[in-house]
Image (cartoon, rainbow, N blue to C red; front, top):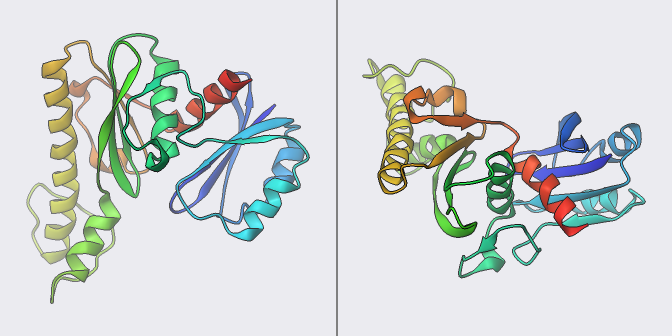
Length: 239
């Protein structure tokens, strides 16, 4: 078994891969609580991790007690795509893994990967396996917080609740503005890139997929596990 660890801005996710299949998974905190037990239970003997957040000392201690090698994905790690990004040292490991994960699921043609996490990331891989870069925009929670923190009177509202086409009070006006704005933004990116690349395959992942209700007409492959699939592929590539 292979241990795959995806450490995001809000939590860490652990996966045990049997070949290309996810055999077991669990979510934990940035201290990687329960990591050693998870690895022992699933009989992992090697692994890889990526992080976009600060790992506290307890997390590194947990990694160090696993008893087998763990590869850390960085911008300098060999990967099965050509990275054209100018500053690889600042390129998020999750973005690299997502692109590789999408390519592992779609072997040819151009790809656009959209990840709706704390930030929304848009990353493009051409048909010749050149990662040309991408864009970063604030995600749902960040947009709600920004409107509250940078105005005098707008409240901080929950992301949960109604998001009608037109808000009927302040809470729904704020939530609908964010949800519908993100929906139109994402569909606009898809429309723009599909006009340039008619054979484009679009992959959507991240925690806000369901809330955004992206149109099926966009021909999207929705997958919650693109990043861990990419990490698993990168580990195999380095072996």
